[in-house]
Image 1 (tube, helix red, strand yellow):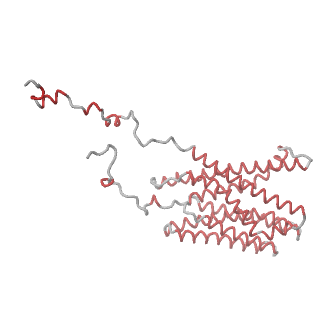
Image 2 (image 1 turned 90 degrees about the vertical axis):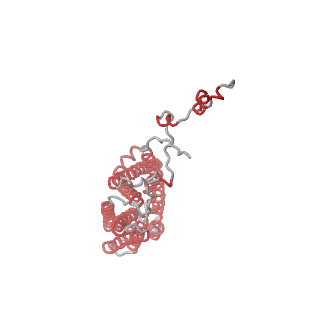
Image 3 (image 1 turned 90 degrees about the horizontal axis):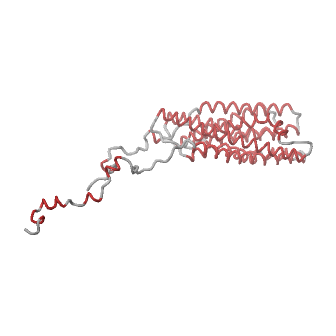
Length: 360
């Protein structure tokens, strides 16, 4: 029985079988998680400080309630991202010391988010005025940090790191974009009429969401690319992440924004109701802002996912066929000509002289 060229039977293969405990099969760590945790902590502290300054600078009473409701989304988003970043850094430390255990990874992630939540709630209660809105902000912020820590318990740590990086960049961009709102309102034709102002506001919001989604997708792709190169320098046999990881990383910031909106509407319902009950204008403003946040999260989700996926697709080379080309020298050498199977008459007659000459 002949062997086909280029194939080795399984019984004769000298390559060792893939070991589940081999370094290439272990979950990859998230590079730069400690730096992300420090940046996220700094951003959360900045959001808490700015909210406190806005509340304390206002007159006590209805103005403080309204400002608390307006500042709540920024604090919750920052706490959600910070909880995920700190839990991710803690997960890297636990995996490096004790190995990768699913239960240990989940417990460490919850513990990291809980630590951020308790610290944030304590800071709010100690520095904010002792009102009913203060307890709502503190409790909702703690819940958001714990949920963010649970998000970081996923097995694919580089994808979570990409989500945290892109989400943090998106939050910073949204705050920086507020400086360009007035010029954009003029650019989109905001005039003296109420309808022109509403139309311009829609276009400004769409522009902000579109640019934020593009930024989120590019940051997610850039982080995963950097993580891949760093991993290859340490372990050339490490498996590469496939396209679903890039898709999830690009869509992650939008998913976090939508998750933050759910936390706001559940945990901060009492504060939103108080702000909406102040006046009819406040009720309209709260409804409009809630709708705008949902639309922004959806835009960032789809645009970020598409951007990251397209960027990943541009890095792929042409597909290689499993079979060898027809003009390959080895293929030509292995190819059998049908005429070669036919016996040569001269050789046949020489082998049997009696058959070569029937007259004998």
